[in-house]
Image (cartoon, one colour):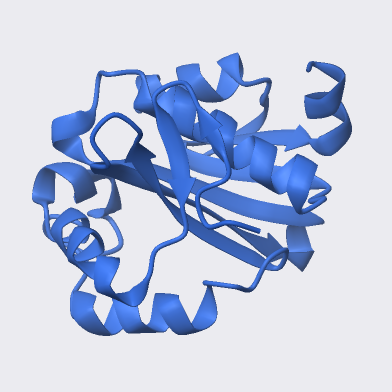
Length: 175
């Protein structure tokens, strides 16, 4: 499969090569982008030793579908990277946990919605994932909105976090 097959709206999925790591480093070192991550990486959520994290991501995620998937979101018009998406299997959840991050300067441009749709197509249509889960703080209104718009169901809250789930059957029945 080509590395840039999946497109949607203004974006496509781009499976990053090792030399694309400059964007990963830029994104995970940006306090505005990583603020959601601050509870795990105080004080600002930025990933410590990001170069090592990029090397680990390349070794452990790229080419590991359907167990793990990672891609950049790339704007088609100019080739700029605007964020990333991922999923990884979680046996305890009977499915996969997923994530989406939009680089802070690119937020508010509908890229979260488009990127989530691309990830769902990849997970459910291509890789045959049975269900996706995501969990994040209840105060992240934009994240809640795009998940609900994509068909995710809220399955609970816990300590200020909301949990969402979407099954392959639910997603495919909405296409």
